[in-house]
Length: 207
Picture 1 (cartoon, helix red, strand yellow):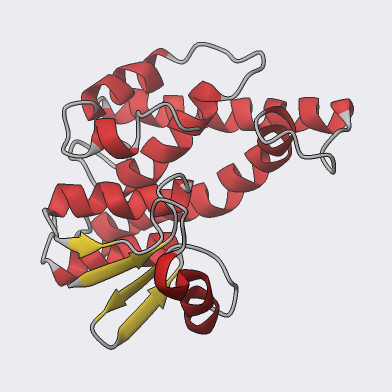
Picture 2 (tube, helix red, strand yellow):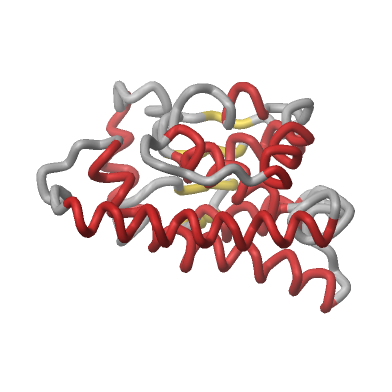
């Protein structure tokens, strides 16, 4: 059985959990409730040199980095609808996945750590405002993309791009601060609501 290491409150763990619900994959999650049973923390350190979650174990195969895990699981299950085999269609999906992991994550980090985590190292109001402004700008970019597709991030069909950006959008929605209204993002988020695992792993009140 698949094993996913990491707490269920982690945004990156939740990506994988939502995808498992989409794929109807049975899995175990030691330490998922934060109690760290059976040395889950030590196991994590041994499996991922970065010491970060999630880590996936599929038999003897170990994989870390949440977006890579999502790609692997979709390919493992033959879900070409989520991660197409055709080069151009696949590139569109992976382009937005990579954008989420690099541009978008970099933008929100300071504002989120300051306003949600209340971390003392992120207390500069100028830096908070700059981070939130950049985050809003990039969410506007996502909104324009959704206007173009009229449905989902990479096109007319739900894909892994929607999985990873659905979690990022939930974080943006729940973080305090002045934020513009993006009608296409709002409509897309509503389209995601009926999907398996969305209420439990995405729109669950956890930023």
